[in-house]
Image (cartoon, rainbow, N blue to C red; front, side):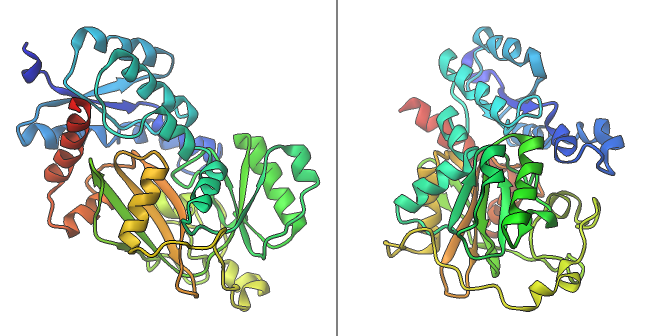
Length: 359
């Protein structure tokens, strides 16, 4: 088969759904894990590209055999690998193996390289970089290990949110992630360190409307700003995309409670937030998000999330490269808002990656 006729391979992690049990080993949906593993976005993506005249086939990467599967591409020589691996074997840091091997084999691929993936899986390092470049992001502290947790003193203005630095997809994020004092921070940090290792990010909770900007192509451009509404959450729950709210639209699935009704501390307004460093540049929100995406090492597609504080500052709270790409994914909905079909959006990603590879 000539190189021009070889199908694009769509690499995905067969064990991606195991993040469910990493988030909570006793999760109510844990018995359905094998069924959930079949729901990879690789299948509708490959089908959409093939129907659009760009043949594509899924490439399943399975734990210890992933390296062997990737090395086999040296003989196959696909024109491009569409890399959907934010995890490998269900582990975030293992996903760095995919771009590393593909670079070594000189096979073009979509999405962030290993350096970009590593940076976005180090939330504290990424936020420090963003702040140094004048990108507004909530003020933060970092807890690296249990010893630091035991001696931790909160210098931020509560409430604060604790997140595992190396995770995406709201893994480890629950109502219990919000803390108001040293004791609560220490307890939550011990929990996250025990389950996910360190470091743990501690950042000021921003009360405000939440938006996201999807970025696509090479060079990258912004799709329309989309609001992340919380209309589907029951009254009293924090306006926050916890793991269960994000993936199952059921914030109380694992025991979260309507804290606004049960905790009197939420009866007072959350203080107005200031960014971790002065916002030095004058640019549109779209330009800001594209710049932040590039600083984070993102390529081809991804998502930048921010909350608009009462002071009118868009505070960036997360950057996700190689984000979820099923037809219902946020970035696909943003593409639809821009008048792009699913296949056309995927084509922009593919063409950008091929264009970059051809120099």
